[in-house]
Image (cartoon, rainbow, N blue to C red; front, side, top):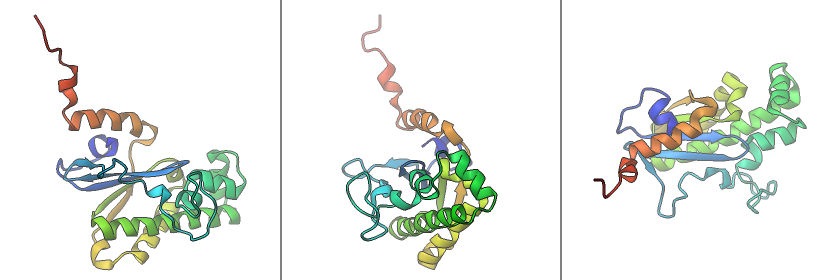
Length: 193
C-alpha cells in the first residue's frame, strides 16, 4: 500500500503487486486501487507456496517454500553470512558462492512472479525489502526468470521495478491503508456538543 500511494506514479484505480522480500516473503495485491485480501484475508502469502518439492524445511512446517530459497534468511544461511552487509559485500566483490545464491534466489522468485502473472494478469510488480540491496543484477535475474516462466502474451507488458520507499514502506503502507479505505470515520466522536 505504501508503494502504491507514496512510492511512484500510480493511477488511483491501477492494478499492482508489491512483493516484499526480507527474512520472509509476502505480497500485497491491489486490484483497481484496492487491497485484495481474499476470502480469509491471506491473499498474497506467496512465501509459503512450494517451489521445490522435498526442499528445505520451512518455518511453516512445509518443505520447499519460496522463503526457503528466495528470502534474505535463506540467502544468509546459504552464504554463511551473519548480516545483509556481509552478504552484499561478498556479492559485490564477485564471490562465486554469493553470486550463485543470489541467482538461485532470483530464479525461484521470478518463477513465483510468473505464476502471479498467469493467475492475476497484473502488469506492474514492485519489489521491496532487503533482497533489493543486491541491486540491478538481482533484479535482472528475477526479471529473466519471470519472463522465461510466464506466458509471453501475459507478461510482455509487465513492468518489474524496485520500490522507492526502503524501510519506510511498512509505516507508510499502514497510513495509506487507512487513507484509501476512508478510515477517517473512526476518528470522529459521535456525541460532540
